[in-house]
Length: 154
Image (cartoon, rainbow, N blue to C red; front, side):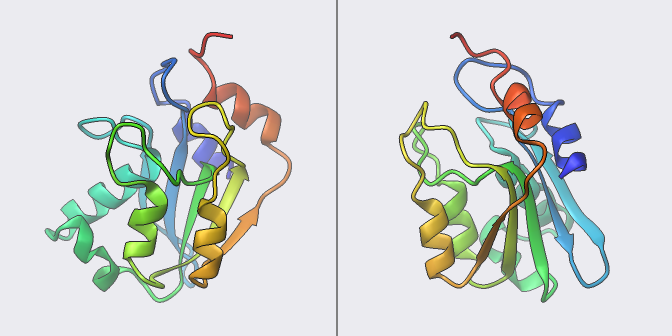
């Protein structure tokens, strides 16, 4: 989670999004498959989405085909829980993860998504209903929220 927080710091502060860091990891070998942070890739990209884009580009496949190349015990670390709704009209991170079936087994989350932009995040329930474990990692909440909300107007 500490590494994901380091990635989040690379995201430009803006009043309209959270600065988030994420990484996909093969939990069997402890190999990092991809890293990402908010607005890293072209467009209004979220951290998880940046991971998916970069890994699919590396394998020369579409983002939708990514499940085919993910190791059997893939986990996602993200500083803020994956979004369930995008105001921009893009697919949410929860929709993207669910689209991979059970390719991602566990998601480690630093903090729950604040309710500022889209209200209560119901994505965790959707993920768990699909058989994906969502684990809250304690200890970095204050630091994660400070980084995530940099650039926001009070």
